[in-house]
Image (cartoon, rainbow, N blue to C red; front, side):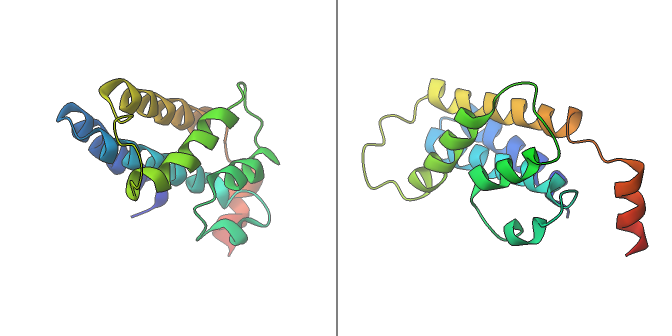
Length: 134
């Protein structure tokens, strides 16, 4: 399964978890979906290999920006994703922040970042030729 298809599946799981009241785990899955959507286009940017196994979505996004500008600044969403990916997986502190509204924000972040990937991270003919020549 490729990163993009995996991201779609994880995003669907995050929606289902939220609908069933599992807000903390929904946030975790939303953060993972964001990472996977961003990674799905990473191979189109020179030097992508250093981020292939990284969970550092902030630098993955920055690396994508070298080639694919964004119509809106996604930095806040990406930063929140980085922060809450670990915090929602390993909740050592206050878990009362994980509400339906909070999980809903992250679901919206995923939708916005998916739009960036779908609409702005477009492979060129040269990208495709390079990919399939290898």
